[in-house]
Length: 547
Image (cartoon, rainbow, N blue to C red; front, side, top):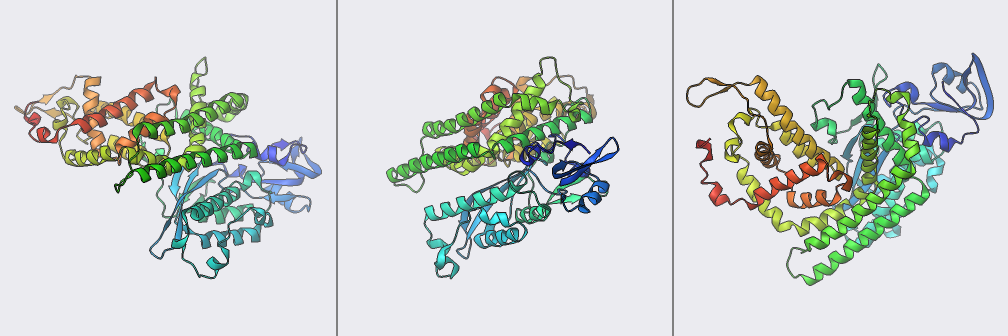
C-alpha cells in the first residue's frame, strides 16, 4: 500500500481523498486503517504506533491491523463519500402531516434523484440509530417539535410558515452534517454502518459485484443522469480517454465539494442563501399585496435582475476556486490515473474541464437551495407566455415533419426521437442550469449525427416513381432550425418560457460566445417561433403537399 506520513493529519489525508482521482470502482482502495502497522516498505512492516494511516490496504494488512489493539480498521467499501443533499421544501400530506422533499446528488456516480418523502419522525428515528453507532452525532443540533407536538396535541397544518421553514432548515443542517461525516467526523469502525443508514434514508444503496466493481443503485427512485439520455458515445479518441475525462471531472467536483465544507465557506454560503431567500420573499409579499387577482404578478425585468445577482455570486465563487485552487487542480490532473486524457499545447481542454467541473459543483451548492425561490419568481413572471406555449405545443405535437418545412432529404425515419429524449430528460428534468445547457448542445449535435447515420443507411423513395433518391444535400443552418423546432415541440418541455429566461440568465458568461451560446440562441429561436405562430393560419398550411 501507499504509505502516508504519520505526521500528516487525518483531516488532510481524508480531505485529499487519500490521493484524489482514484477510481471509485476499485474496491481495493475503499478501506483504510489508522494506527500502528501501516504497511510494507522494502519488505519490512512499518511499526509506528500511535498515529499511522495507510490507504489502500489488502486482506493481509487488515488481518495485521485487527490483531493489533493500536490499529483501527475503517471499512469504506460501499460508502458514498460525496453525497450532496438538500431539503428543498415541505408540504402537508392528506393527513395534515408535514413531509419534506429531499434532493440528492451523488458526485461519484453523477446521478441526481429525489428521496422518498420523509417526516419529522423519520429524521428523529434516523438520529437515534446513528447516535447508537457514533455518539458524536448527538452533538449536531437537531430541531425539537416541542411538548405539544410530541403529545400529539397539535396539527402540522397549524404551524406558521416561518416555523416550518425554521424546522426545514434545521433538519437540512443536521442531514448535511451527517452525510459529510467522512470528511468532518471522527473515523471509526462503524462508519460503513452509519453510511448504510444514511443511504437507505435517501433511497440509495451501493452494490459490490463479484469482480469488485462498485455501483450506485436507487430503491424505486428515478435517476436523472446524463448517462441515461446521452446514450451515444461522446467524442473521444478512446474509451480510456473518455473514462479518464469523466473520473477527472468527478475528482475535481469532490475537491470543490470539500472546499464548501470549510467553516468560512459554509458560513458565507449560508448567509448568502438566507439573504437571497428573504429578498425574494419580501418582494413576492409586496407584489401579492398590490395585486388583487388570484395570480401573483412579477415584473420580468425585476425577476431577471434577482436571478442575475445569484448568477454573479456563482460566477464569483467559480472564479475564486479556479484561481485560488489552480495548483491543486493541476496537481490532481497530473496523476497517472488521467494519463490517457489528451490535451492541446496550451491546456485548453484541461482548463475547460476544470471550469465545467467547478461550475457544476458550485451550482449544486448555491443554485439548488435557491431553486424553488428562483423558479417561483420566474414562473410567475412568464406565466401568461407559458400558458400560451402549452396550448400551441399541444396543437403542434401531432404535426408531421413536413409541416415544419423540414427538407425531404433531412426527414428522420425515427422522427428525431433521440433528440427529443435529450431535450425532455436533459433540459426538462435535470436540475442544474449547466447540465440543461449541456443537454441543449448534446441535442443539437445529435441532430447532425443522426441525420448523417440515417442518410447513410435509409434509402428514400420518390413520391412519384419510387426510385431511390441519393441524398447529397448537407445539413445547413437553414435546415437545422426547423428540425430543432420539431424536436422542441415533441419534447413537451414544461414552462419553456420561464426555463429559457433561467438559462439565458444563469449561463456561464464565458460560454456565451461559444457553441453553448450559439445553441442556446437556437433554443430561444425555436421557442420564439412557436410563441409567435398563428395557429389559425398554421392549420390551413398546405406545405405537406408543396415539398
